[in-house]
Amino acid sequence: MSRVRVLVGTRKGAFVLESDGKREGWDISGPHFGGWEIYHLKGSPADPNRLYMSQGTSWFGQLIQRSNDGGRTWEPVGNRFVYDGATGTHLWYDGTPHPWEFARVWHLEPSPTDPDTIYAGVEDAALFRSTDGGQTWQELPGLRNHESASSWQPGAGGMCLHTILLDPKERERMFVAISSAGTFRTDDAGKTWRPINRGLKSEQLPNPTAEVGHCVHRIAMHRSRPGVLFMQKHWDVMRSDDAGESWQEVSGNLPSDFGFPIDVHAHQPDTIYVVPIKSDSEHYPPDGKLRVYRSRSGGNEWEALTKGLPQRDCYVNVLRDAMAVDSLDSCGIYFGTTGGQVYASTDAGDSWKPIAEHLPAVLSVEVQTLPSLA
Amino acid sequence: MIRVELPPHLQTLARVGREVQIEVSGAVTQRAILDALEASYPVLRGTIRDHVTHTRRPFLRFFACEEDWSHESPDAALPPAVASGVEPFLVVGALAGG
Image 1 (cartoon, rainbow over the protein chains, first blue to last red):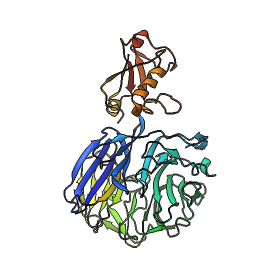
Image 2: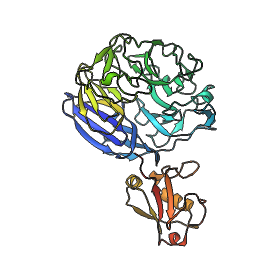
Image 3: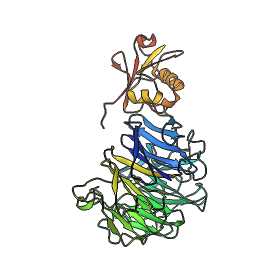
Image 4: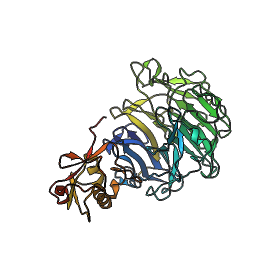
């Protein structure tokens, strides 16, 4: 029977939750690196025992940990993230020029084919890559050298490159999302980039339809249709059917189109999930009801998923990297909350149960579907 | 041998106890101690001072002989008691803010 491993990054350590294919009973290990902020941890598709972790604190800065045994043991690898060439400036909150300064790694994206190759999205926004298992990191400077970069500006959460999508069919194509610069695409393995934000509208910008400056919270794709992208923006859920060349709003009947995560069913490319929260200053579910919303039509028509989720007095949030899916036949959906719960559904969202209830605030959730041990 | 005390998280990271002893050749300064410390425990690189500028990380302080040496030149000679190993050089983290 297949197994599932859920990798949870929290404000005070990492946790690894494992179950068999029934996904009924869960073994929880952790906290790994208790006391440290674990922004993200993710496994390599090429070697599921190879995991990478972004570990850090304001006191001691950034570390990267690597596991070769599925999270049982860890070793530190390279933590030197140095911008390539002259750092230049971007805009600060007050609109003045501000030098690029490395703060932390927000997201790690392992290569699908090579366990030693991994990409890192960082704050202040840039893309790094390691090809030696994380021992050394080099910036792909083409992104930060884009002509618009000097005009990028942080949102309240920092100017972070938080999402990296690797196109499974076009091997030199990648998509990244930056808060709050927008979405960018490369078609030459990161040498050059272009903003792909046409159709986005953001009222906080002097020009709401500007080429850059949009606060994209998350983008997602299904590997069978990499040209179709879904986006949760700072307000608005969006969809592109042309690899980001243009976007259309698909918020439809959501109670609020503000939120952070968005993800796609493992086997149904038009089935997508979001977790609406009330507003940009009220980061909790509308009406105190924790509801995941599912669209089976790629947006516009949404249904509330509530069975097993608290429907009163619930004021937690789900952060952008804290939702994931497994690839079992009955697709499992998982998300973690700032209240320390991790919820799982084994029926594509029809029903939910908590698989961990008392963790520190959850920052990220990733899921690995593993072969049976036998 | 120079005695260096580390905060708990760095002890865990480097897999050492509260105090480590390192050899420093030449003048015993903050820079020399940290160079030797990082050479002995490479995992600590970037955790006490910036990788490139070697500027002390803002939430850490350097104490020695009951004085704060954080704002002294990294190349200033530390007290003889530190150089002789009688007193430790302390790397201290700011009180936790959550």
